[in-house]
Length: 195
Image (cartoon, rainbow, N blue to C red):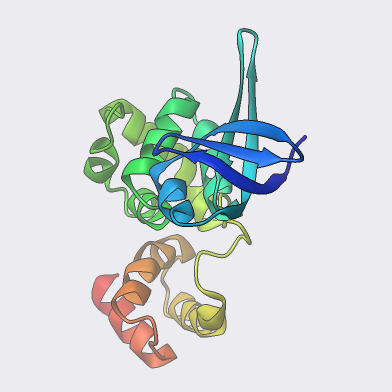
């Protein structure tokens, strides 16, 4: 299995990347997130997902392990194929996808071309608990490393106040997005207003 390829960008378009390594040109299908991350660069590391079916063999490339892990989590859902997962990652950022699933925001998920109501509901149903547990994220952490101790402390306090970890995890990304430098007490106050 190929984990990643380091090489020179031979050709870059919003949907495909040709990466040259040791005289071999690898064709990788990419999302708009990856395209934007690679614009203006010549040497890159691409994290690879190898997709094999009886009639086709494709490589999907990602700028980060985090994006690849979320892609793999999305395609684990029945009815969500590689094309739909790539479309989701092209329309919404990884953070927006996780937040929409945690908040059960079916309308935001449905806004992606090719994702209908049933698929959006299935994504929420099958992935919400997995995302709360940290699956589909590079380091199984939904929050920035410098905030993790503060988030853990605030989460512990909120659990002691009687709130469930799942509900806390739903509101935490939006609290941190509003104030990334929040102190423990600020997070708890903001969470109490939203829970």
